[in-house]
Length: 249
Image (tube, rainbow, N blue to C red; front, side, top):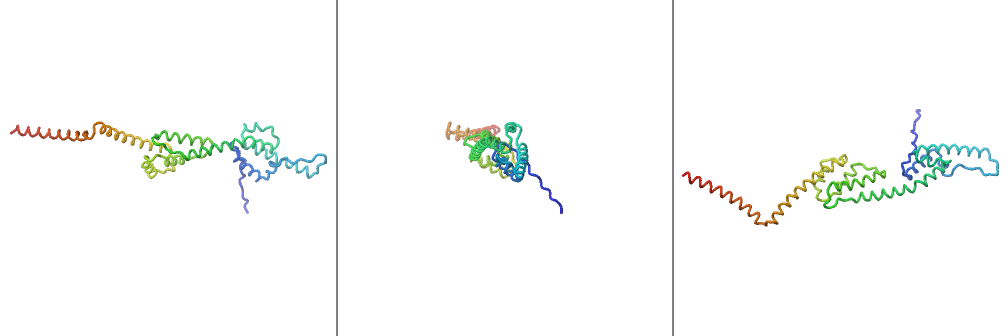
């Protein structure tokens, strides 16, 4: 019967988030049957009595496990952190020191990330806000979330922007969603499409404003005057043709 080969679990690396690392490391040490040494420390022999051979063997075994645990802990942290715990002689003292140093900062980071997630979720484009301005607001928050180790693909940001545009962009949003694979669309591609649409809207609104200004300035007699001018020009051309024919006779 073939012997099955099982991959050894990797030592969890400390990435600044204590809760996550501590959970993985505790589970790792449990799998090695070493966790009791971290939790309770190396057993001591009561003074005033000669230890038995069984007691000495127990202490010696615990010290060996403690050295192995320390080796795992040293593998999981970088040099800068290691330099702050070199004075710790046991695995338990190292564990307690890590907990004291980093548990509080992890909670702060988690609270900051939760606040950023909420801010990202409620983001909406403001009436009158330009496309570039809104993209800048969204990406600023997204980049802060990434700095807090939040895994965020471009598709998440693309989908967020599409569902939070103002109503005047409804048509182009539908068009983009129907003609593109939003899952693979980049942020730059989306921004380019929306900018083109924004420029077209600005041109149309500019033409409409110009026509409105003329109507307000000159009134409805402006439209009638234009019609009369066209009629007078045609009438003049007809009269000129009539005179030429008459002269030929």
